[in-house]
Length: 537
Image (cartoon, rainbow, N blue to C red; front, top):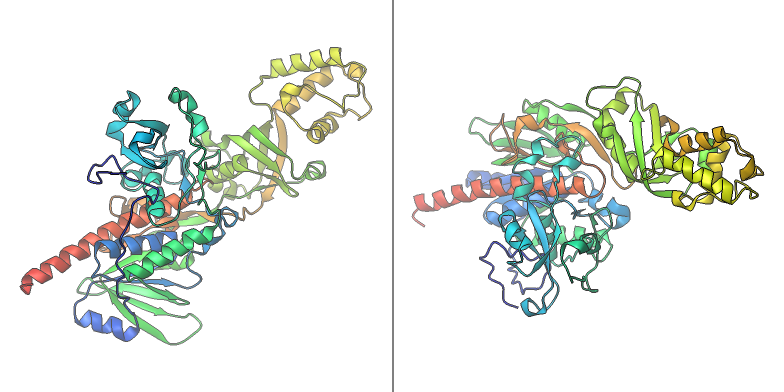
């Protein structure tokens, strides 16, 4: 297979091409080594936080500027969130949304020896649609709309610079094949197209997992890439403080909070990527940044209903859920969501509830996590049709017990049907013939407008996300650089950005880390080139 890699159309996201890796000498960052680097005027980047954004940004900066000395400081385990996300599988990104980029998959044997996923620029969309290229359209969608905090600001260059398709390409090229988007959703677009059976498809909601279904493959890839690039990873320490010096560089104090001994590092660039940790917020305020108070996002709802708790484990493929709060505000349109829902021992969960919790994070916080949830269990059937179906069923099954059957169009399970009957007040021995028209109306209302009192929040174990952090107005999203302090950068959840469940929060980390790393790498590379010219090299 021959690909012209200079052509911007081709950006393979499966490691089909041979790649030569040059092993670089590792740089050892002890306190002494750092001090000596400062004497030699070496460019040093200190990354605070060893999560997705921090490690990804460090790799990018070191890739663009190999002479840049890069140190990542993490007080806990590197990439701990990556390790536990998606139930240990790691939902790397979301494949249904590629803001200004189109994903396509080749399906003509004469053009490749294997099925590969490629990325094309937006300008090629018309040519693709009219068959100018031998590809099938997978997805064109908006990405920023999945971020309750950041949905307006992220519609610019942020995801265009490095979006989901770029993330998938990055990991696939480094030996972590990913499951592509569900091709069946787009069958209607291309006549006679049938997806290759060898393609492993991702979840219906667009979550992209590694083919291994193991987050360790993602973690190992990132740590390996950092190591071969020469990034120094320092674990078990914290950045205690940081300040700017008269020459514009940063003096970073590193140590353990439980010990009296600390080290001072002089850095040319500082990237804060600490997630929702107070450490990052504290450092940001030391440089004059403000902080939007963090509150929990992505959580389940506690419902005090013993009858509902008995249904734990029952799921609904599609409901419409609306959240009403005691003190509503003007921006409440997103508090109506459609999607799957799950009954738990403590209340309700599932994508539709998690999305409501994300969009309503601040409203729920001020309401002390109390409100009224209204669920439509048959959103594709209007209430008049529901009443008509119940009346027809009554005529057809008049001698049957109402608890034994119901209109199949409702798509419910028997246990939940009996729950609805309990709330309506009908006993399990009631015959269909005995149901009055008022009872049928009440059942219809319960199916279309079933109310639950939210009494608190649970915890969604797969993702620990907060709303809040450094305001986006205080940084440049084109470079992730602070508008207040030159050469100070932020990326990831330390910013006031959070997404709904489904890989969107990781994509924010990859995009922000990549952009910050790119700008830092270019700055360091330019300075290094200038210095070489000065000394005549």
